[in-house]
Image 1 (tube, helix red, strand yellow):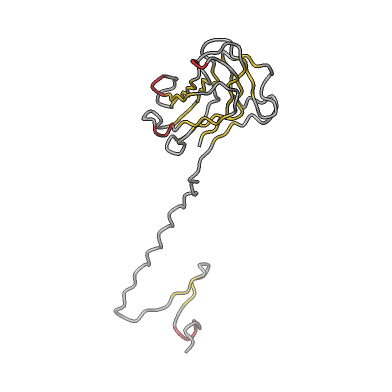
Image 2: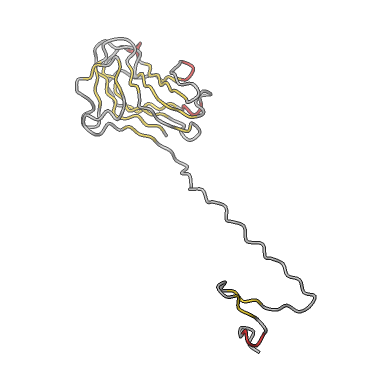
Length: 193
C-alpha cells in the first residue's frame, strides 16, 4: 500500500482546499496543532560608540552654530578653522538643536587656540539644555582652564560625570573664554562622543 495514494488508503480530497482528509482508526482523537509562535522582532544593533561632530571644514558653513559676542573676521569658518576676535564680555557659540541620549555621549571636546586674551579670562564653559529643562543654566555646565599662548589644544570635558548630564540633551553652548580684549580666538572643531 502506498500511503500517498488516496485510492489505496481511504483518503479523500477536499475540492478547492488543496487538502486531503485521511480516515482515523476508531477511538483515535486528534488535536489541532498549535501554531509556532511568531519570532520576536529583532532590534537593530545599537552601536557602542556615539559621536556628533562639527568640524567646520567647509568654507563658510557654520554647521548651525551662531557666534554671540564674537567678531568674526570672516563670514564663517575657512579651511577648517573659525577665527574670531573677542572684544568684550561673555563670548559664546550657541549650537543647533540636537538630540543626544546622555547615557551614550560622555565627553565634549573643543579644538581651540586663544591668542593672547587675558589669562584671567581663560576659562571655557560648556552649557547644555535638556528636553525636561529647555534652558541654559550654571547647574547644567562644566568649566575647564584655557591657555592664552595661541597654541592649538583639544579641551575635553567629561560631561558624562556631571549629575545634570542626563536624559535627552537638546542644545549645546560653548563659552570659549569669559571675556576678551580684542585678541584672536580660533575654533576648529566641537565633538561629542
